[in-house]
Figure 1 (cartoon, rainbow, N blue to C red):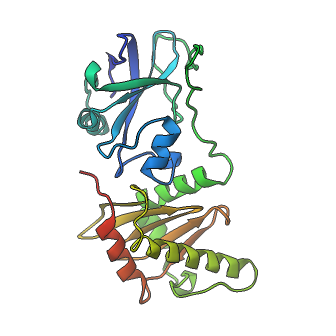
Figure 2 (tube, rainbow, N blue to C red; figure 1 turned 45 degrees about the vertical axis):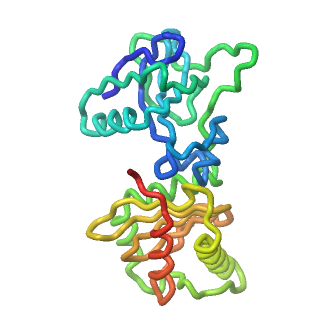
Length: 270
């Protein structure tokens, strides 16, 4: 589990609660559709090497997000914590980019022995405290969280669409009424995703990760939409314009080649 360490550039103690990676291949999807968008929201330059974000509280209970360039250290800490092991996460001062007030993600934990989490008292020139996106109502943040859930629980979602009539085929165009609008939205998503092959999108719009066997899990995002797919199977599309709905896309003649091509240009975890 996370350990208590002094990690900010001024030597103040930070009670570390968690950490996340911010790289083109791995970043909190809820914060944006691509890596540069997430960096912009945090006031960071989108360097290809990426960052580690260390979330914790100071001795007064104030929320802080420490940004470090030591991505390997943060990755090792996350891997250890995932295995239930303790890890001394204490980035060197020369690797720390800055300490940002607030947290960009919602945390359900707090440090023992200090006051409840709260934003630090603002100082002249300080940026506004970071705050998690509102994911209570349907919109980009909740749509991206939904895509995350499908990627993590692929088998459960796949079992729900064994009826061929449930699929929106890649070649379908729009029709009349609500169902036709959804089909047209899916078709637009596939066309925009295909456009990435000729005009590469910002880093992180197309990500590839391990799946069972020799397959890959693809995560593709764009303005108002997210798609999750496996290179050996189907795809699921979520749309900002269609709240709460998940649209399965059958393989048909087009999807396998599109997914294979997208996988070739995707960024992958190192």
